[in-house]
Each structure stands twice: as C-alpha cells, then as structure tokens.
Image 1 (cartoon, helix red, strand yellow):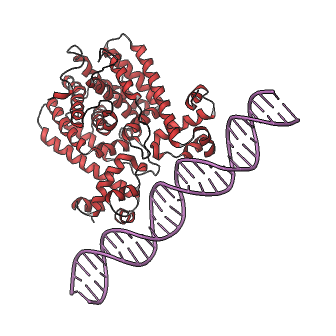
Image 2 (cartoon, rainbow over the protein chains, first blue to last red):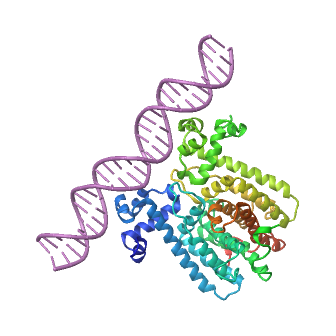
Length: 222
Length: 222
DNA sequence: ACATTATTCCATCAAATGATGGAAAGAGCG
DNA sequence: CGCTCTTTCCATCATTTGATGGAATAATGT
C-alpha cells in the first residue's frame, strides 16, 4: 500500500504533489488555523473540491505536510552528517551551520512549520510527531555528545535542540528581523551564519575534553 | 487621554484587565487565528459581546495584548539590568539567564506571543511592532557589545536576538520538548538554564577582549 | 428618588470556512 | 467508438466566527 504522501513524493508533477508543495508554503506562513483550504487551492489554481478529492480533510493535508517536511529535513541532516563525518567538532559545526543555514533559507517553510508545531497549539488536536526525539538523538550522537545512539543524555539533547532552534529562529523570523537591519537577503544570511558560529562553536570547542556531557546531571544542578 | 490598555493596567480587577489577561493566554497558546473571541469570553466567563464592548474588534484586542506583553517584558529587562549592573560579563549573563528564565517560565504566554509574532503571519495584516529593535539595542548596549545605545553594530544585535530567542524557544516549546525528556517541570527548567549557560556564556567570555564586536563587518564575511 | 450613564447579556447577522454531492470533462482501453 | 474509471469543477451545506443592535440590569451622580 502506498500512502498519498508517497505517491506525491514519487511524482512531483502530479496534482497531489503540486497541492502538497503549496500547502507547505501556506501552512508554514500562516499556521494551521491561519491557512485556509481556499488559500491553498487558489495558490495551486484549482477548485477547492479538487483539493479535498486528493487529500481529504484539512487536518489530513496538514499531517502530510508535516511528515513531508520532516522527511526532507531528516534527509538533509543525514547528507550533512555524511559530509562532515570524521572532521573535528569545530569544523563539523562550521560546515554543518553553513550547509543547514543555506538549505533552510532556500526552504524557509521547513523552519516555519517546525517552529509553529513546537510553539502553537491547534484547536483540533492532531497527532504529536515523535520523530523529533529521534532526530535530536541522532544529531547528538554524530556530534560526539553521546557514546551510544540510544541513551543520549538529556543535556546533550537539549544542546542539540538549542542549536536547531537557533537556526530555525533566524530563518523563520527573517521578515521580522530583517526589518530592523535594513539589508538585502544575502547579507542577512551571512550575518546569521556569522552569529551562529560565534555563539555556538566556542561552547563545544573548549569543553570537549572535559567530558562530552559536561558538568552535573540535570537533577542536582547548582 | 488614557488608552484602554492603560486603564486595564491601572486596575487589574477591572473587566478590561480580566479580559486582557485571558486574551494573553489564549492568543499565546493558539496564535491569532487559532484563538477565537468566544474562547476568550468563555474563559473569562462573560458573554462575547461584553468582550467587544470593552475592546472593540479582535485585532484591537490582539494589539493591546502585544503591547501589554512588550511592556512587561521591557520592565523585566530593565529590572534585570539594574540588578546585574557592574558585574563582569560572565556573571551578568549567568544572573540574567537565571532571572529571565524563571520569569518567562512563570509567564510563558510572553514567550509564546513574542515568537508567534516573529514566525507566523496573520491574514489580516496588523501593525508591525517596532519596539523590538529598541529592546535589542538596549540589551546589546548593557551587555557591553556596543559603545553607544544608538548605533549598535548589527552583529551585536544579532547576538542579542540569538540569546533572547533561545530562551523563548525553550519556554514556548516546553510542552513539546518535555514530552521527549519525561521529567517534571522544575527539572526541565534547571536543564534549560544549564543548557543556556553552557551554550551562551563561552562565546562572550573568551572573545570579550578581542574587540566587542568581533570579526569582520557583515559585508565581507568569509 | 430620579435621570443619566455604564455595563452586561440575548438574539441575530453576514461573511468566512470546512466539507460534500453530482454533473461534466478527460484518460485509458477493449 | 463505447465503456469504465479518474479527475475536475460548480453549486450548495452546515458550522464557525467576527461583529452588532437593543433590551435589561447595575452604577453613578444630583
């Protein structure tokens, strides 16, 4: 059995895929409730009922969008991992920040959707996506913050979340933030990379030797 | 002339204030479109038309909420600044992270609203809030990242944004993130502080002497 | 007590929105 | 061609949602 999502991914010119692509953008831009099926249909240039024919109710389309975005994001992370494999932690982070930042600025709806899913509840409660924890553990492992893919210490997971969220925030908030910098997009992207490296790299460079996980376990902090 | 918002802030028991308080929570939780005037009214325990009587249309109430939240946030930042004034940058950040994290976890709707405003567009376009740039410049100045309050270098502004967004993200995303850690709230809060300090402090400690603004100006990066 | 004003709720609208039935148009196939 | 299956659109619903008019109730001032 092939799911509608798999069909869409197989044939990017199909109506299903075209709808999915626009839905990604609209849902990412306006959030679940801010996006209407009519907006999406109009964007594709089709009647609203055609959209329902292919994807069923709004919540189902949204679910497909979330899964689709997660699929792409995971694929990119795997690609990055294969590129930086074997480098020092400093270089790894430098390259990873470069690639992921470029990628997410090219597909800002990914960051938008990830963050909106974190931060905004939806009236019609939908499934919680459990692929986030996997992501996070895998990245933590490949950064050398944990010795085993399973059983990654909580502080390591949190550090990965902090990194990912920092990038997503600058991508997703670009309209808002750029309004206070008054600079073209490419300069903003450079500034984002520069800032991310400035903030993120030192933390992992100096403390690396003093025991990957650093400091006390969460319980008895301070 | 006193605005409705000022009236509400003056008398916290007034109907205006009670509505505003609930509106903060609901708008923060569900976003602008996800929140309905009926949800807010029901939360307060009043009829929907009473809400309209006090605050006019939905967009006006939302605007009041945003201004209200910004007011509180700014006040807290000023308070923190007065507390950490004169300390070393390291201590300043340590204390500031402690206080701001505690504060925002006590008022998570502040983080929610700030982030949703950054990341989600609203169909009915509303005023863009220009108090953000001020915030950011002031913090950057008080962190010693700029010599004058006016004319703060862009990299410094970006660093402040990164810091603020990191805190907001962990507060706003707590429901989502805690589901992957399986720990009580207070432990999660500790872990957040620990992670924020781990990531944020090293960047500012070592490079402090090598020229506050660090590295090249945005233009010719890399 | 009375007049005036402020506040609250009930009833109701109009528009927006999610969703569907069924007719038309198209595609594949003997 | 004639048949079936798929796809698309038009018309239409039922709900939800933002919003208001007006009656009823409570405050306030004189």
